[in-house]
Amino acid sequence: MDRSAIWGRWAVAAMFLVNGFNMGAWAPQIPKMMERHGIGSGLMGVLIVMIGLGAVSAMIFAGKLIATHGSRKMVLTFACFFIPMFPLMILMPSPWLAVPFLIGFGAFGGCMDVAMNANAVAAEQRLGRAIMSSSHGFWSLGGFIGGALGGRAIETFGYAGQALGVAAICAGVMALMARHVVNDPPHPGETKPKAQMFPRIPVLYLLGAMALFSMVPEGAVLDWAGVYVKQELGADLTQAGLAFGLFSGAMAVVRFLGDAVRNRFGAVTTLRVSGIIGGIGLLIGALAPDSGVAIAGFCFAGIGVANMVPIMFSAAGNYPGLPPGSGIATTTMIGYTGYLLAPSIIGFIAEHVGFRYTYGAVALLLLVVASLATRAAAADGVKA
Image 1 (cartoon, rainbow, N blue to C red):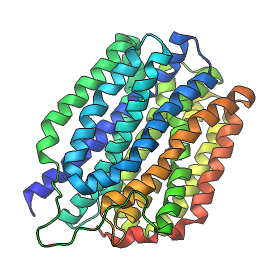
Image 2 (spheres, rainbow, N blue to C red; image 1 turned 180 degrees about the vertical axis):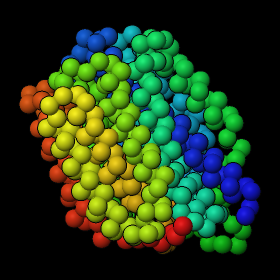
Image 3 (cartoon, rainbow, N blue to C red; image 1 turned 120 degrees about the horizontal axis):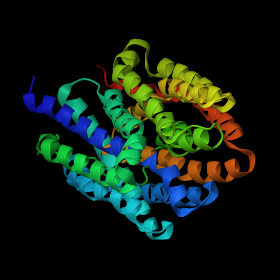
Image 4 (cartoon, one colour; image 1 turned 90 degrees about the vertical axis):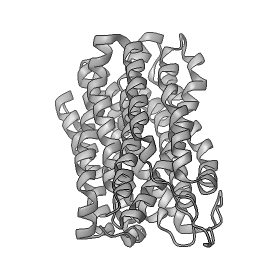
């Protein structure tokens, strides 16, 4: 097998790891930021929604840029802008001064997400086997490391030290792996599929809606699980970091097995069972009598949520007649509105009724995805 293809597989895995590590490191910073600036969950929800707004707004253009310049060039470009956004938004002396960097964090992180998924499709084609679920596994592994160790890092080095350390680690990983990222320009003599910002293909929008319903729970745990277990269940900051960290860790383990599971049982069955497991896990978290049970519930939910989004992205990225960037950009853009909608809605509702009812409602979204599982059958187009 081509050694460059093998290195390319690990290079795109590093891109997923960096992106997830940043998002995981952000989770334990949220309750710390609320304390530092003296703000409630409602206002924090408004600030968090800036991340989603930046992501969704920028993703409109990501697919066309990737199709024009290739996923390799764009994933590296987006990453170089994404990495410094995290310490910049953390170090701002007021929440309002952080808003431009929150938007930038979402915009460059979201565009990097589209580009690295498109590059994973290119790596799949080069390797001749599926790697999408395991690539997302590296995102979850990064989230686990960033979330599980982030709270302890803040307690040890302070919020500024943690943020600067995260940026330094990510820059080091990028420097080591950048040259190995798969190059995917159009081949001479071949007709390049036309890139469209809004492809007129209804199934992509349905897949996007399913991704949205799958990403709302992921965003709900990322942004609010730590606040929930800390404020309502009496957890300390380290446990608050574990709420998302173990959720992401469970996702990582299952995603590393996801390609084999999907090829064994098929995309439809995998998606249906995953939605049911994820819904049950969130219900456990919602009904938990203490922080330990809640964290266990979120961990179980991570097992279910793990392979849902990769299946939708794989189906969209392999849609015939479109470059991977266009199909993935459309589905990802809609899916990321989960990150746009969930934080603000959950924050405002939780301020009035608490997080328990909110997580119970979010669990129902996963059951809706389970009922629509047949729509993602195209994900079986790439075989491991």
